[in-house]
Image (cartoon, helix red, strand yellow):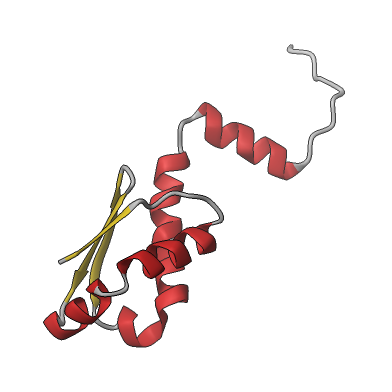
Length: 98
């Protein structure tokens, strides 16, 4: 039977270690980006959002309204900075609106 370590770790430390050991951070980031998009952009824009996909440092947003896509294209830098602030890290460098 294996010996237990008497070292005490908080649950958050154990979860961080688990995520790091199993290389799950990219998947968690993709899910978190969707949540932050909905929080930052609000229900009016989320209603017209068809899909959200994060690949490397580029966020792809597919919208159902061409008018909204045009309006959002003028404020890409502001959207990127707001999303990164909501995520708490510099995860998104480029935004592509489709």
